[in-house]
Length: 278
Image 1 (cartoon, one colour):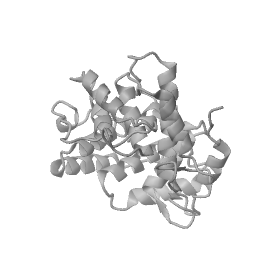
Image 2 (cartoon, one colour):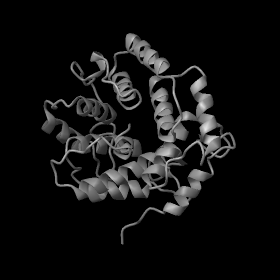
Image 3 (cartoon, one colour):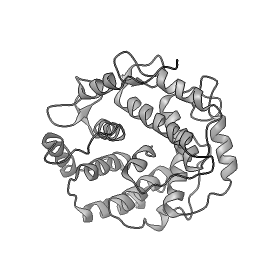
């Protein structure tokens, strides 16, 4: 019988990383970070728990409000902060968000910056992204990794644009899967759970599947440790980020089994957008 995820042990692992300050940390002894808090909240939501609110999670709401008040860091961290605030119903200064996005695009036109700016514009502000973030002139870096492809495809999906060379991209993503079932950064590299997540996001956005779906699931499940959380690989220590990537990967694999090849995902729901976040 195939090994199954131990969900009670996973949730105990997550709860042990919650701080009195309201956020979540990478380990029980480390302070809370925005990234760990986003991953913990996303993980619990995908597993079917209710969205935290000001009333149900006042300490978490207070932590997020404090993080909103300080100078924001990189655009990827800002994205995770703002998305978590939106999930929890925390009010935001939209003019500050708008100014932050404009400042980011003025100094960084990379694919990653375009991806995060576009998602914040659409999901937080409810606005169409700036032309540089709309996908009209979007290019994949050379060389690229599975995360780059996943972000590229998501921006294309948001913009409602067809993907040139979709079949070639799907085949390339399939080649990043290794014999152990996991995915590398690109073909021929070591399997890690974050690459599984990114590779599956890319394939899902193309309506494709990994060549060895059952092996992909077995690799991800094998990354859950005796402490409940997931590691980057079957022999790695567990952390919240790897646990989030693991659960997201398993849900994407479930979706692939439930839908015929060629069926593209909707990104209108909060759950879908979280699963496709890399």
